[in-house]
Length: 250
Image (cartoon, rainbow, N blue to C red; front, side):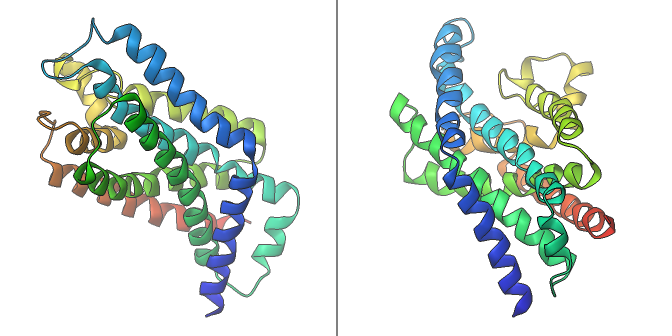
């Protein structure tokens, strides 16, 4: 029971800290609007696909981007806790480091999901067709995608010693993952030599799965069940690596 209480307290702390940060909540609304309304409107005529406009195509990619950027950068809370001494207090508590990692992962993941749900609501406002089926399939997929991305952020934070180094490395990881995920343009139109970079990116399969369930009639890279399988394997791998890296950190 002490392990569960510890996980719950860490989860609750991360969620409350996120909800109290109004600037972050406002930014979570403004940034997707800029992408969807300005960028999407500007290119909707030149990059539209048969049966879809570019905003519809872009929306699942921006949803994936929101989860990616939020999950990765919120790993910085580990460095903040370490610098201000809170991490030392957690580590001497009578719970395992696995539980500490789990509580952090769930808290950061919940915060990322809140931002993802805000973007999902924005999609309905700007006219993206989102019925009960789309919502019922997209939300669990978002949770699966978030788990792996949060673990990457926590792994980086456990290896970094300063806020500056974390910001640099996180940006270096974020931008290639975003641009090489098919979020902004279809992977199918790319030359074969470039497609391999997209196939090696786990976010590609998350965006592909979201696009499959949100855009009725879209031709995916892989069948939905294979996308989900790859995401689950990726999640399991980074959970194991993240737990190990966090437990070995002094």
